[in-house]
Length: 437
Image (cartoon, rainbow, N blue to C red; front, side, top):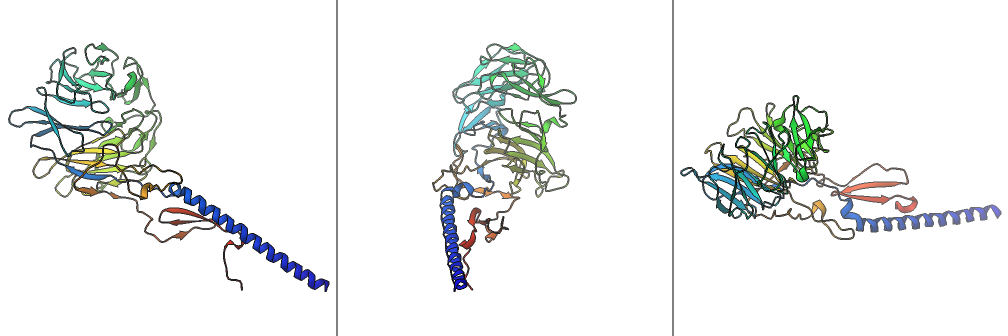
C-alpha cells in the first residue's frame, strides 16, 4: 500500500511538473510573439537597395561641353555650345530633368562649379582671360571678376561657396591663390594645388613623388601628410565632398587618407582586359561607383557602370549595356547619379539619371515597410518616364521556403527565416507539442 501511494504521488508530481513546464513554455511563446509584433520591422533582413535609371530628355541639339549635379542632388546642370554660333548655354533642371531653364553664358565659359544646393555658380572665362564669372541668382546674371593671374585658371570652390581657390592650368602648377570674398581679393598661399577645397579653410591634395594624400587646415598655406600610402594612379582617385572618404577602385579610406583597406569584393569586370576610368564615393563611404571601359569598344561591347551601396561588399551593374562613352557625376551622398553618354553610332549625347530609393523610417510598434515595402525616393528624386532596372550580383532569399537552422541547444532557441523575417521560437519542455504515446 505504501509503495503504491509513492508511485501514485510520484505520478501526480510528474503530471504537475509537466503542466508547469507547458505553462511556462506557452507564456514564453506569447511573450516572444508579442515582442516580434513590435520589433518585426527592426529584425527584417536587409536587402541592398537598387538604383533606378531613367532617360533624361534635354531640349535642343547643341554640342555637349559639361554636365554636373549639385552636391545635394537637387539640380542638374548642362553646359552646351551652339554648333553654328559658338554661343554657350547653361541648362538647369530642378525636377529631375522633366523641364529645363536655359540661360545665356559668358563667351567661352568653361569648368562650371556649383555650391551644395546650386544657388551659387562660377565658371572660367576664355582660356588665358584674366577673369571668371559668378552667378548668385540661378544663372540669370553673371558678374565678372578681374583679380587673378591669367595663368592660374584652374578653379575650385568649397561646398558652402565661401572659399574660392585657383592654381595653374594643369591643376598642379603653383602658386595657389585663395579668396574668401567671392573673388574680389586674392591671397597667395602655399605651393600645392588641391584636389578638393572643403569648408572652413580645409583642403585635400594628392601630391609629391611618389604621390600621397596631403591635407591643409589653413587655406593651403601649410600641408601635412595624411598617411603613408603611395597613390599609384592619381587619376582614378575620387574624394567625397566632405573630404573624409577616398576610393581608387581597389582600396578605400574612411578617415581622409590616413588608413586604407581593400574593398571587401573586387569590382566585377565583364571582360578580362576591361579597366577602370572613373570612380566615385559618397560622404559616408558606403556608396561607390566605378565606370569601366573595355579595351576594344564597339556597339556590343560598351563601357558600363558598376555600383555598390554597402561599401563594396556587393556590386550592381547598370545592366542594359547602353552606357556608351561619356562621364558620370554623383551627388555627395551618391543617392543620385547623373550620366552623360555618346551614342557610338550617331555621336549624339544622351543623358540618364539614377536614383537610389530611401526606405521609410522604421518606428517601433508601427507598420514600417523597411526595405521590403514601398520605398520613397530621396530628396528631390521624384521622377517619371521609363526606367531600366538594375541587376544585382546578390540573390534574394525571399523566394526560398522557410528553412530552420540548427538548435542552439536541445531546449534552447531556434531561428527560422521566413521571407527575410527572422522569427525566434522558444523550445522549452512541453512547448514542443507532441502526441502522447
